[in-house]
Length: 373
Image 1 (tube, rainbow, N blue to C red):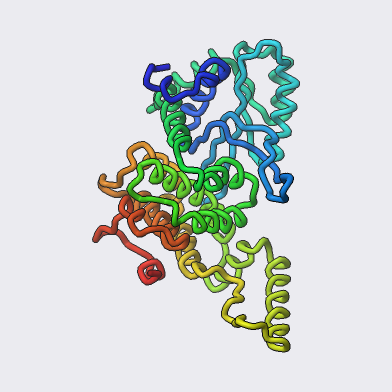
Image 2: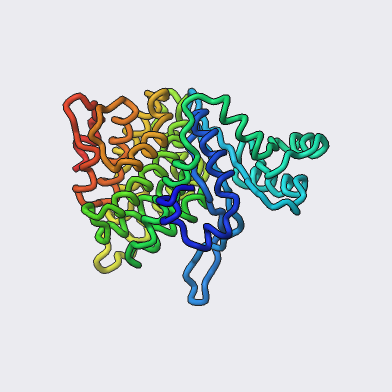
């Protein structure tokens, strides 16, 4: 590990996290295969604090999470666990990882150990959908892959990104906590609605001139792109005439949940008509979010260009390296700009956050996004 990377790692991490090298190697291998990767993803459940405020209760963490999207934007999810502790039984660790795989809805898993597992252990884990390999086996895998990013650079990027959030003001604690815990707790439709709500509630505290605020914004755009791609996959094969209804059904958790919400809204309106409340107006009650037209337009755009939109997480990961948007845009980068503009406008962030996604003449924009101001 370089001295520069080490400066950004707390001493407790340097001394205690002996698995960081394995994590960065596995992430580099999966990135070379076209996956977007994230290190140390926390799985949590909601718990109640003494004063009734909900807070995340950490269950476990995923050393490496990798996501890729198929030709129809179907997600492919891989989880990885890396350990150098020799006393741990590989088979027992495999059964634990199998539970994580199921809990997270992943398609497959990797277990990286310091030593090669024996044939019996490898076969047992293969039955659980887990590929077991050693540190040396991981090195051999990396040697076979073209255009592999340096694992040390991958680790340094992760550490520097996480370190940028430690100096933020306490006003942004909930937003930072959401990207760490809340996003991964929710279903894709809920995470999309929650992310915009949380960002909107913290919009006054976000400063587009602060470099760490811009990093946070780009990371939230990246998370939003994951939800948008899963949303687009859910309506990918729907005929165009049925798209608005199918999209609303997904957004609200299914047709039964949507119908229940619609009935509840109608009943509320009836009650207000019968007994008008002081200062209450019918316009205050609406099921669809105020950004719904722009959201529908955006997921339609993503579904129409699956080969480019599937790269959205990778585009935001590249933007996080530079925090600029000055290079010649590809169609995938243009779609990333659309996502960034959508979040700025839906969450009512300062217009300055759009600067990395500045409009260029050749950028085709959805009509609804053009008129959403």
